[in-house]
Image 1 (cartoon, one colour):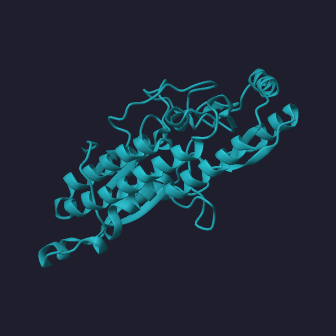
Image 2 (cartoon, helix red, strand yellow):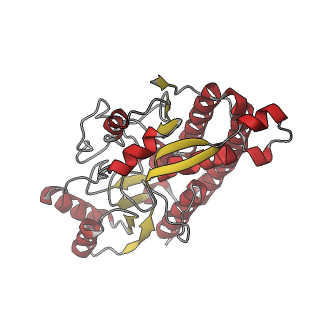
Amino acid sequence: MHRIARRAVLAAPLLAAPFVSARTARALDPRPTVASFSILGDFLREIGGNFLTLETIVGPEADAHAFSPAPSDAQKLSRARFVVLNGLGFEGWMPRLIRASGFRGTEIVASRGIATIKAQGGSHGHGHGHAHDDADPHVWQDPRRAQAMVRTIAEGLAVADREAAEAYRMAAARYIATLEALDAWVEAQFATIPRARRRIVTSHDAFGYFGARYGIDFLSPQGISTRGEPSAQAIARLVQQIRRERIAALFIEGGANPRVLEQVAAESGARIGGKLYADALSRTDGPAPSYVEMIRHNTRMMAEALAA
């Protein structure tokens, strides 16, 4: 298997290319490509444009932590030229699925080479066993690290697909400029909120990178995985902390079971302020159908709750 996950120099879709030679145009039949989950699928749409025929295994509003692949998912991989996954054990079922499918294309691990932070709180495992038990896999929650993921994906595609290499790199460069502007916008939304007030409760520990980047403390009854249930002691400690510190910002997450956080809200007297998107995008008619819109939606919800 040809595996590529290097840092990149960047990419662009076919429609954006100012000139494509006749020879290149003949070579540019769409490449079958598989993304492990919806956020990576969105990155690939931005980078690959018309060069890729994209299929996503874990779609919008779905929980990649608790996902169980079907035979049809192996079939997607068996006919793919590229597969892109997050790594760091986030989709711990993915390596087995790749092996079972007979995939013989290029595998790109989007998190390769990115500095990680340690998982905080509750259960660290994803129930699949992996070599990154101390690393929080939710690296995309920091738009700066998301830029590094886009570079890695674009370079992986470019090295394996030389006819379209310049297009991938050009498109990624444009998208990274968008992510740089997004990062500056998010920072500005929290600038007037005192650091001591920036405390938020979410369903599970998925926002560590967002918190590290923008100076926000996130609390949750569950660890980095949604598999399993938090202990009664963990819920009781969180309820006591919410009461003691008068934390008002509680959010459920798209794709997650709201039951635990509803219990926390009922016992603490706090109110759930709405839904954030952590591990998956919303459907196209929802508030977070793309990565950029997801970060903007989450930021607006958090900033409004913290400023109230």
